[in-house]
Amino acid sequence: MITYCDLQRETEAFFKLYWKPEFGQLPTWSEYWYFEGAIPQNTQSGCYTLFKGNDIIYIGAGLGDQLRKHWRVNKDDSGKQYCPTEDWKEVTSIITIGIGEDHFPLAAALEVFLIDKLNPARNSQRKK
Image (cartoon, rainbow, N blue to C red):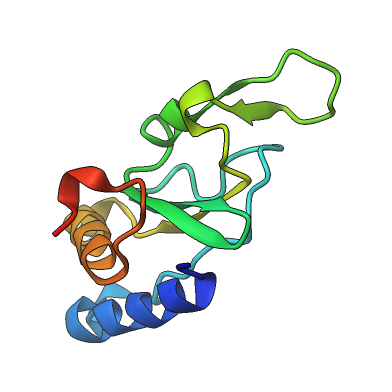
């Protein structure tokens, strides 16, 4: 099981290596998003993490359009605006980290770094 604590630890290790003070405030992970309202930090470049319960199952780069491949607009009366797509129906929540357009390459690097360190189950394309 890969948890938020594991993600936070490895994110901190990444930023110790690659974030410079002149870049500004250190990016942080959002609160959990449960498919209601706007995706956190969706106007920035960054990374996202998909959870099944407390377990991280996927890490990706790119917010907004890239993240939308994992959910659809909900048309039933459950009260949620969005639902995971059939391929991602086990996803229970998402968190994001916005890095910003000026540092977009770091978003891609963070994605690769976290996948390498944490090896989420659904990141099969980059597994060791």
